[in-house]
Structure formats: structure tokens, C-alpha cells
Image (tube, rainbow, N blue to C red; front, side, top):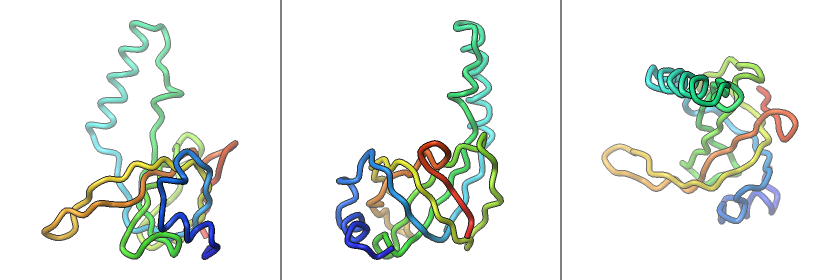
Length: 138
């Protein structure tokens, strides 16, 4: 995992935007699907059913979202992974090691770190399912 390609990813993640990457890391935080997310998806399905004639389930699928740390990332930085749950829900919890392949979207964000807000350098890894990628627990 410490190949020159991943050292480049740690230094300049924006150059990997919309490219497929493979990463191995440790889950730091798992996000639960909130009530507002479930309500919003149900509301959008109802609108699509009423006005389009289809509920659009394919586009409104539930996702498992979690943050990982890795040797391929800068120290104290995390990468968000969004896994489509329709391809199978995984039993995720903090501390589990995973290996994932998918499309990287460079979308840096701010996150709270104690009293200060810190810029998170990395974006989101998605399409972690066939045919583009995979997600496995090690």
C-alpha cells in the first residue's frame, strides 16, 4: 500500500478525482442512517411515483457510510466510504480492517476536531460494488 502511486494520493488527492482507487484501512466511525434521511427518501419516492410513474428505487438506495484511516492517507486524516446497501449490508463497526475499490470523488470537507474546525483533505469513495469495485472485511 505504500507504492509511489499511493504516496502521490496522500500528497495530491485532487489528481485522483473520478479515478478508480483501491485502499486498505481501518474503520474509524460508522454513520447510522438518520430518521430524516429515511423520511427524505420515502418522500422522494412518493413524488416520483406520483409525477413520473416510477418510484426510482434504483437511485434512492440506502447507503452504509463510514470513515476509514489508512497508511495511504495523511496522518489523522480520514476517507469517507459510501457503500450501496442493496449489494449487501455489511456488519461494520469501529476497528474493523477493510479493503475497498471504487471511484474516488475529490470533495474535501471541514470536520470538527476538538475546539477547532479542520479541513479534511480527502473526499468520498463510492461505487464499492460490482461491476466497478468491491468492499471486503479483512
